[in-house]
Amino acid sequence: MTIRFHETPQNVIGVMEVHSQIVPSIRNLFYFKLHLFIKKNKRYLSKALLDTPSRAHSKRMFVAPTKWLLFQDRKTIIDNDNINLTFTYDDSVLEIFEEMAIYPDSDVILARRFDGDFLELLSIYRPSPQRGVIWENRGNWTIENGLKMSTFDVTSARRKNLQQTALKSCLVMTDPNTINHLTDFEDKSVDPVTKANYPWILYLVNRMNATISFEVTNSWGYRTENGSWSGMIGMLERREIDIGGTATFLVPERIGVVQYIQLYTHTGSRFVFRRPLLSTVSNIFILPFQRNVWIAIAIFLVLVFCLLYLSIKWEYNRDRMTKSAAYWNQLNPSKPTISDNLLILLGAFSQQGYSYEPYRVSSRIVTLMLLLASLSLYAAYTANIVNLLQSTTDSIKTLSDLLNSPLKLGVQDVVYNRHYFRSFQDSVRKTILEQRIEPKGSKSNWMSVEEGVRRVRNELFAFHGEIGTAYQLMQDTYLEEEKCGLTEIDFLNVLYPLLVIQEQSPYSEIIKTGALKLREYGLKYREEYRLYTRKPVCASQTSFITIGFTECYFALVTMGYGILLCVIVFAFELLWHKR
Image: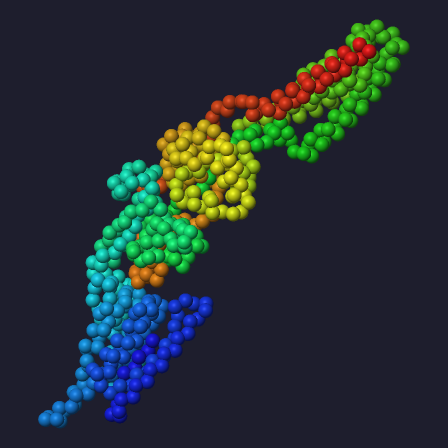
């Protein structure tokens, strides 16, 4: 906005043109052009100023990034007695800004012309609605010397003193007792975000030379059915408070309702679980060898079976016609069959022994090669099995893996978890909620963080909760080997929670600068380190592994099928002999 005030000897000519155009891609960017030609400042200037700025005030047009430049020319007073000319200003015009919304974010410059082309530049603002107008000397301008600035400090640095302005904030507390433990670091697992942010708010307010009062609510704030907002976000939208006292997640529906400040609280909510044993998700009896090794072993066994069959057959037929036939019959009294060859092969390969004793060189060579190969494979296989029994799996990396895993799921019962879990519409997250968290006909799995951490320790269980709180409990209650293999999976897929203020807040730049100072001075990290526990360090992975039915499942299934096959064959044999 540009306003020019000129002294002319002609009659009063008043022309005012206001052109306003909103740029579609940028909100609240206006172009104005105003020309005022008046003869008497005292008579006409106040009326003009009271009209245009009042409308701008009602439409919040003094808010950044709009810039105003006001020009005021000198007033001439003629002394007829002494025939002197006096140049002065009517400062009563400036009183119109006493009630205007020209707060620390505004940019209103008054250029007053003195002798010749000398212009004095003054900046006008009010620290808050509770305080009066402050005039800043920004420098001067002449045609010869150009612009001379008195200071190059930005607005947020020059106007950070709010002169004990009373600000308002709101703290979100899920437990009413939190109000009694905001600074003593007791019950760190309850409302940790609020307890971390509370000192930050006090630091920011102290830096601004302001005071602050707090409201308390139990909800961060979500859009209701009628379109309004509840909780802390609703208070900011209605401008009932100036700054949110508890950080909140950056989600699309809140953009444009509140303004986020880059002051993160390094925490979040995720699924935390101990990596399950490999035997719970895979058949460890087929894992010691790769697929191509198993194929090679199968080809080898088929080849040995054929050679063994031919050598034993030839050995039987040849030895029956020799003098050593009696000795052969003592070693192998019955005629060899295919099933005998198969039992020899399985007995040698599994290191369980067999009843056949080779007599000829050829059969002995085949048997020796079978025993040597079986010994090597058996040693490698059993060594890998022992290692795999104690191994954990890293195959659960995504939400889909988690959904299809044998892990049970539970979620910390807090208001934002219930809201966000029910707001997702993608198939995986929706299935997790409907089948694993709130299964129909069963008890829902909303629980306290203490119960969730206990079940993670004792069961195949994944718990979704605030990770700093969960890790603190794990650090206090888990054995050293139980701290190994902790894994996280992000469900909400949001950034760290941030502080929020009013949209187009007059203190936004001051608060942003203060937030950067908190990080630079280390005050931000001090509170986080004292309230939040990082993932426990795995000091020792050595522990005693108890073998249960899960590890023996494949062997038991194999025995079961074998028994079933025996019963079926036995039944057929009975029927055959009774026929």
